[in-house]
Amino acid sequence: MKVTGVEPVSRSRYKVYVDDRFAFVLYKGELHLYAIREGEELEEKAYAKIMGELLPKRAKLRCMNLLKSRPYTEKRLREKLEEGLYPAACVKEALDYVKSFGYVDDVRYAGDYIEEQKDRKSRRMIEQDLKNRGVASEIIKDALASVDQNGEGVDEEALARRLLEKKHFSPEEADWKEIQKMAAFLYRKGIGADAVRKALQNERTSFTE
Image 1 (cartoon, rainbow, N blue to C red):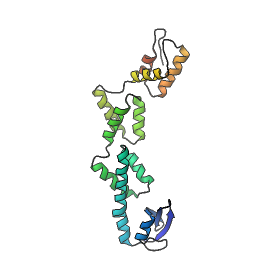
Image 2 (cartoon, helix red, strand yellow):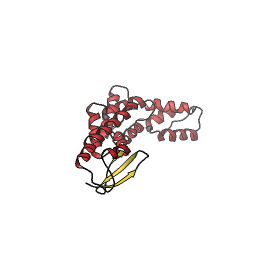
Image 3 (cartoon, one colour):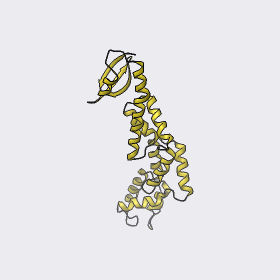
Image 4 (spheres, rainbow, N blue to C red):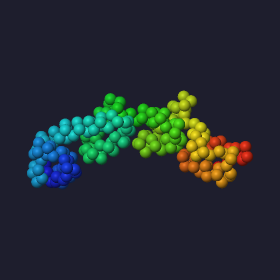
């Protein structure tokens, strides 16, 4: 194997290319430690140590440090490692490691997220947020069904009324144009038509979508 390129990523980190392909990122001191120089051969033993010990350990520590601050889905954690330019094999090993200890669990993540957001966001918005975070549709569906069965699901009518209160909006005092404007606002929040209708009903008008 021949080192065909060494490019700085930052003041202390360098991309290393082996046989004209990107291989990994190392710190400046590690270039010296493993005798990596552009145009020279890279020993098989050094390559194996970097790929089999150094980088997997670093990727695992990166995962653990990220998880100290907040929970991550598997997708988000993978993206963080890929942003750090870890080789695919090291990314997989690190993810398998944290998953084996239950540190990354998309089922638990979905349930916790729903509990945290159910009084702030509509069902549709929660679903979209979880999908954007890489949670599988089936997991999201099961998690929402679980809170519904417990009688603790998303109350969109109550959410709509809270949002209207924040806007200092009173259906009893509003004209039709104002009601339509608030309806559009609630729809943009992902709230369903039935909940919007009930929240905007007043004694003077029967609201329809």
